[in-house]
Image 1 (spheres, rainbow over the protein chains, first blue to last red):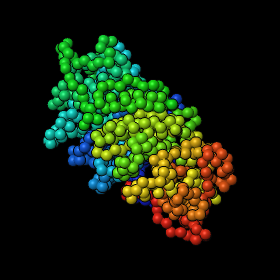
Image 2: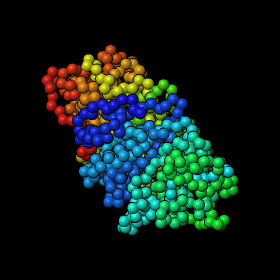
Image 3: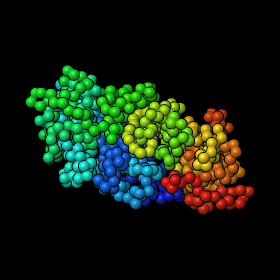
Length: 315
Length: 315
C-alpha cells in the first residue's frame, strides 16, 4: 500500500543492517528509506492505529521460542488489535532494541516479522534499530476500516462469542515458567498465534457490535468491554471452548491468546463464520443490564469466583 | 483528530497507570481506550508514518536531562521525521518500557510527552506500557501531506539549506560524556529540540524539492540525500550556521539536531522563511552531478576530510 519502492540508503552500520533487512523482506517491505513512510488510506475509510511492545524477560525469555517465532509473534500481537477493530491492515512499523547478544539473530527475527506480515497480507512500511540491554520489538500497525468494532458498541441483549479455543497459551506459559517443555499444541499457540483479521472484518460486516482481542485473558478483556459499554457481562464457564488438556478456569485467565471476544446479536450466523474461516465461533455468554462494568462467571447458574487475567505491567 | 473521546478502561495495574496518564494529558490525548485509535486523514492527503526509539544508556543517561525532558525529546525526535516530509501531524502513539526504578517518574515523562504534542498542535492517540530493564520510549508519529518532501526529490542544481544553527547538541553530548555540565545553550539544544513542522510545511509549499532531518549529523544526513537522489553534494564548511562556541567541523558531525537539511531551487525566499518562522535558513552547499552518492566538504575551494556523523547502532 505504499506509494513507491525503496529509496537508496546512506552509509553507516545502522543503515547497513536496515539494508540487509529490506533485502531479506523483498516485496514484503515498501516505502522504506525516507524520513517516513507514505501511504494512501482508501477513500471513505478511517485510519486505525495501534502500538504494542514485546520485551525480553517480560513477554518471553530467550530460549522459550526461536528468534523467528519472536519476530512473528511480536507483529501478530499488534495486528490482533486491528482484527479487534474489524480493520484491514495497511502496513506495519517495527522498532527494535537489539542488544549485542542478539545481533547474530536479527535475520531470523526479520524472517518471523516477514512471515507475520505475509500471513496478514500486508507489508513492513518502516522501522527503527537501536542498541540496548534487552531485546524489545515495538510494532505499530496501521489499518483502515469503514465500520469499526468499537468496544463501546456493546449492547445489553448482545450474545458474546469467542473465536478459536482458549487456554493453550496459558498452559504453554505455565510450562515455560516451571522450566518444562510445553506440549506441542500449547507451544504452537504461544509461538504462532494468529491475528483474526479476516474474521474481524467478517464480524464487522455481518453485524457484530463490538470486539476486543484476548490479550489479558477472557475475564480481564470482558471487563474492558463491560467498562467501555457500562454494561454487565455474564460468562458461562461450561461454554468456553478449550484447547486440549486445559481447564475452563485456566482458560478464563489465559492471556495473549489473540482470539476475538465479540458482542453481537444472537442471530449471528456462526455456521457461516466457521465455513468461511475454518475457525470455531462459540457463544460464551451474554451482555446484561445488571452489575454494569462487572464480569460474572457462572457455572450451573452459580457465580464462580475468578481472579483477573494476565497483568503485564506487574510481570 | 481522533473521531471520539475516551472509552472507560477495565481493571488492572497497567490500566490504572494508563488511566492516570490520560487524566494528566486531558485534551492532549484522544481516542485511547479501544484496541486501536481511529482517525480521519484529510481528503486528498496521504498518510505519513514514522517510528523512533529513545533508549536509556544509548540515547541518554539517567541524570543528564530531566524525566520531563526525556519525554519531550523522545516525541519531538519522532515528530521531526514528519517535518522532514513537509507533513502536518495527526497524532502520536507512545510505547514505553518502564523499569521499576523509573515508575515514580512516569508522570514527569508524560508531562514532557504532553508538552511535545502541545507544541506540535497534535495529540497522543495511543500507547503501550511494558515492564523492562531500561527506560525506552518508542514514538510512532502519524501525519498527512499533499506535497511530500521526498529525499529522492533532490535535483542537480538545487541549493542546500539548513534551518537553525548546528553543533549545540554535539557539544552538549560531548560534555555529558566527559562527565561535565554542558553550557546552558548547548544543554537546551539537547534537552529541548524543536521539530521544524511549520517550517517543513512552508518549505514543501514554497517549492523545496527534498528534505531530511539532521539526526545523524549534517554530513551523514547529506549522504542520505545524495544516495536517495544519486547526486553529488558539496557543503561549504564556512557557510554552516553554528551554535555559540562550536566549530564548523564539530557541527558537521553533530547528530540529533532535528534541524532540516533542504534541497531547493536557489530562488527560495530565505527572508520570507525567516520572517514567517523566526528561524534562520542558511544556504550551506549545492547539489552536483559529479561524484554521485558522495558528500564533499569544501573549505576555500579545497576538500576537507571529515568523518561521518553519529552512528547510533554502534553506540
